[in-house]
Image 1 (cartoon, one colour):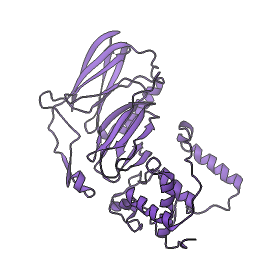
Image 2 (image 1 turned 135 degrees about the vertical axis):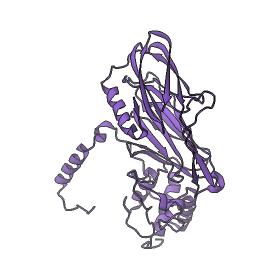
Image 3 (image 1 turned 45 degrees about the horizontal axis):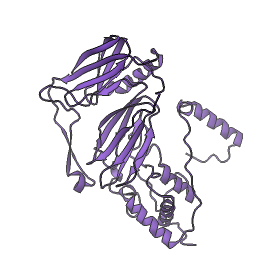
Image 4 (image 1 turned 60 degrees about the horizontal axis):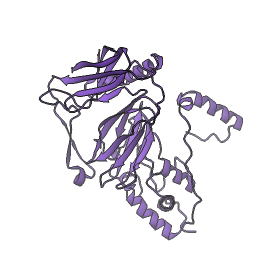
Amino acid sequence: MKQSPNNLGLMIVMLTLTASTGPTLGAQGSATLTGLVTYRGPLPLPQKVTVSRDAAFCGAIVTIQPLVVQATSQGVRDVVVSLSDLSGQPPDAPPPPTIIKNRKCSFVSRISAARVGALVEIGNDDPVLHNTHIRGDGKTVLNVAMVPHGPNIQKQVKQPGLLNVKCDAHKFMQGYVIAFAHPFFSISDESGRFRIEGIPQGLHRITVWHETLGTLQKEVNVPAQGEISVHFNYP
Amino acid sequence: MPAFAGMPERDRHAVIAYIKALSPRFNSEPVEKPIPIPPEPAVTMESVNKGRLAYERMGCTACHGAAGNGWGPIAPSLTDDDGYPIRPADLTGSTWKGGCQGEDIYRSIMTGLDGTPMPSFEKQLPPDDAWAMVHYIQSLDQRWPGLP
């Protein structure tokens, strides 16, 4: 099943609803899901944006290319992979924080994933003022000034869903955080590969999401233990 | 949005309860702890000057402008949560949406204004600098009576 990026809001609602009605996650399993996400279509031209503020530091023109495909493997970087048929339980220990740095007038990482209950920690490595404005469902969740050399800001993730990260001072800065109610998610590396461990046995729906390519889903029968592999291909 | 000061208090509370029933967020999200607002120090020329430096250091000029008139260099690009253009507050004489008292301005600086590009400065600005900034912002208002 493929959905366009424009349907992502609906998709996230679907994920949320599924999470609230699906089986509740008990103890973690022993299986590992690995996989590869590839793209075999033509690469769109990168977007070039003229910088109107802090151009001396950010550069006069910023090049934006959300679709990064490795030439050898055709693997796609920054695809968020998750199980979408499980609801979660509160983690036994605090989940690791998700770090977002304002660095060279971009968000590093541009794409992040976090478990509900985790902290998102925001920092500014740049010598210019940024603000980090996070919205969910179009509503402000967090909007903090990030002055040069100022302290990091922490905010706890409270609900699953898609969060949009922007800087109002530099409109070309954009990123996403996807929050999950369970720990079964991963982000593909530069070769398009991903790995999710500790998956419970059973038939699971796997969802992959990319910022511009949209969403794909597959059902996978996960064994009690061992490793199972799955391949997603855009478009 | 007009003033409803004439509405009986009981009706006001009833309207508040009805409005809170319109969004599930009032039930699903815990209420954040209010930020502390320390007592306002005396308004002096020193605090106004200190506030000007903080205003510049925190980058307020980007939106509100060096003169505070709301025409900073990035003002034309700003939008609200619904994507509509929104102009930064004119600090030289416009209506204060968050309240015009010193504590109101202090709170707006420290919490930001959700739904707008105005961010929170709570973690970046020490309370004494925030109060100094309040005094400087008040001094930009054409109606400012001057130092006491």
